[in-house]
Image 1 (cartoon, helix red, strand yellow):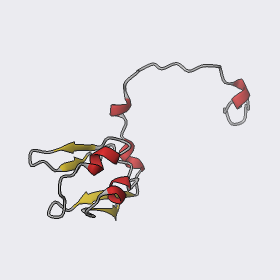
Image 2 (cartoon, one colour):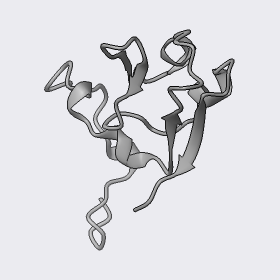
Image 3 (cartoon, helix red, strand yellow):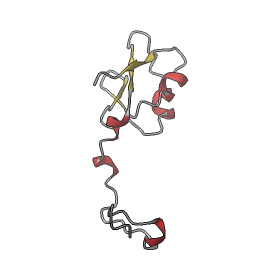
Image 4 (cartoon, helix red, strand yellow):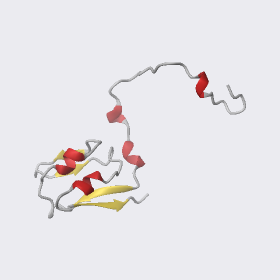
Length: 97
């Protein structure tokens, strides 16, 4: 172990992984990683569900009007939804921090 930093070498790591709390991914606020967020123009949206289908993080859910809305708590801002939207109803906007 490197005593001056307290960081161990990869050679000193134990083999295997211990999952202490399985199924906890929903608790992680991964949306804080993004620098851009998708915004949907509901007047242009045709409710085709392509954003829902292609989103790798499953952040979309259908609201009472049938539109797919983003859960920014988990959205990483990858832009796949905007790229796949056939009517260009989704645009990526810069996140204001």
